[in-house]
Length: 205
Picture 1: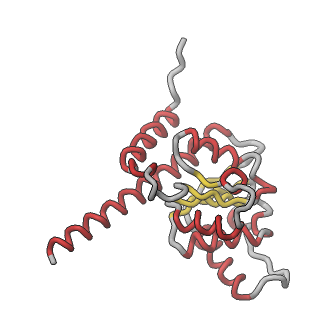
Picture 2: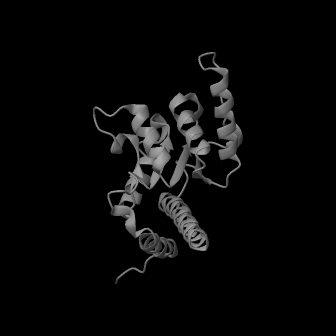
Picture 3: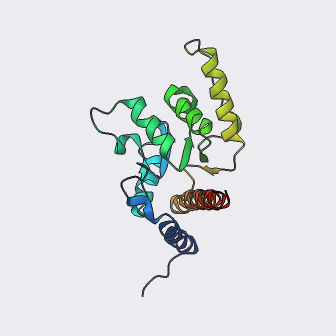
């Protein structure tokens, strides 16, 4: 007997078709190098949450960026990542217990917030209230201030919570993918509206 797709799977397939229609130009040469930038602490989530989400999005013909999958030997770390963040459409911040110990994670989060990307927070095995930027004396005060600001912005953005030991993995992947694709659609539609307004303004002038 053939199994009927779940409601979550049906919803994701529908949204995937919509983003492919609205973003049909993504495969052209001038398209950005990635649709979704996945910000994460590798030691915590690379082999589970971040990695699974990356491959799941790839399976939907989207173009996520994950450092271990999207970079090659010889790439300059900060340069490659900063280009991906600046040119992506949506960011995913996977928060984990050791996230705030990483300068790289906080730097990427700050850049996503400063460039006003739509960010989907995923609180993995950690509560938002438990996330704090620590001052161990090794970081400039200006960096700490910016990191704290970016972290607060993320903590007060509606996100997804997930317990890797007791959580439902298929449902988590469905929910996370659903959130990512909905935000991609919003970005596409906002961009289209801006182009229409610009075209109207040029015709009126």
